[in-house]
Length: 167
Image (cartoon, rainbow, N blue to C red; front, top):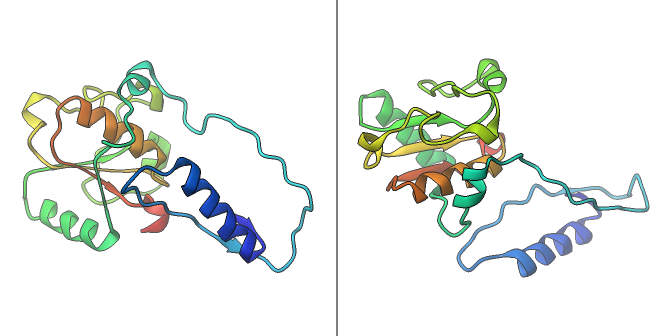
């Protein structure tokens, strides 16, 4: 959120007051500036992520996995690297994976986010009790995929809080 400092903070409070769920933590990137570049603001609603039908049907913002902070994420990455059971899934596009990823992250097998399902992510019944770590750029896609995985019975879904942009 960019604007005058007090306005940025007021906007963040406004969003949390109207959209917040009990126990949910919000992450805002505030970019206060002393003077606005544009005096008038128009907000347009648009879909940030194009969803598939299964993602829409499964979405429950109260049960999309557990957000973990970067320090815990790094510790879990080390455990995976040492052979601890679990999966590390990059929920971004194949292009984003090609540009950079965490060591051991699996490349998405589908090129379109709306096609992601447990099967296209390479997950099956045998993976339901293993930890599944998912990450994306800012966290939005993980909300949907995490919710879908939880709905499909995956018991330990962890998401990197704020995505890799906050890592």
